[in-house]
Image (cartoon, rainbow, N blue to C red; front, top):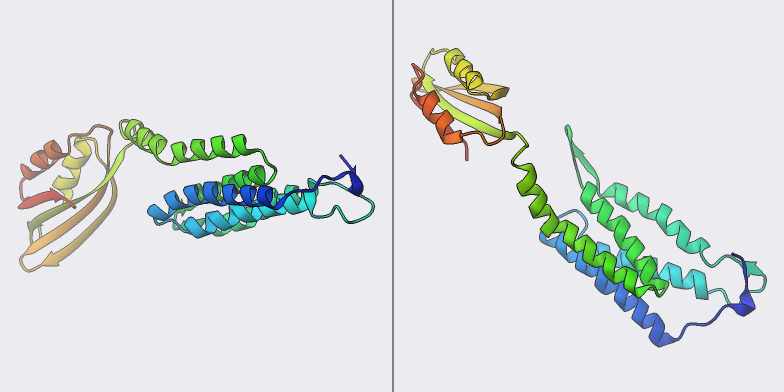
Length: 228
């Protein structure tokens, strides 16, 4: 809604300080968690994003009261949503087929919203959102990992030693019989032995020690173990 500049209330220095300090504290709390996990954007980045969003909000709502005419005090704040997308995109890194940094990009986006709420004086929403974000990044992450690990296949590397010239065929066949899916195979030679490195995907709740025990019974296998 368009408001006349003369009707815009002013904001006292203590109130400005409170809003900016709250934005810094809440954004820093989320950034500290990212810093502990050594992510691309940490404490300083999240704090700056939160404080910057709060200042943009304050400036948009209270900084133009001396100008004549009419304006929309939410226009500057609305651009924060668009602008933070460019910063979040810089935190996303693609490595081969995997993508890293999506969670950090999301936290930057949420921190901008927290800073905006702090700058607008919506303290309860800013504090509650920060608590929910921290809950999602730490306890919820642990719970999700434990639940999903029961159903998600595990990727492991098997190291086996065979006599020089021995075919790894029987070893691979036994692996597939035990339910493992072959992802990659690497063979090298060391003195009178052949080293076989096999990347496999194990079914959920697979008996890894039992698989090693079964593979050790395959004829020609001198040694077999899971890579550390």
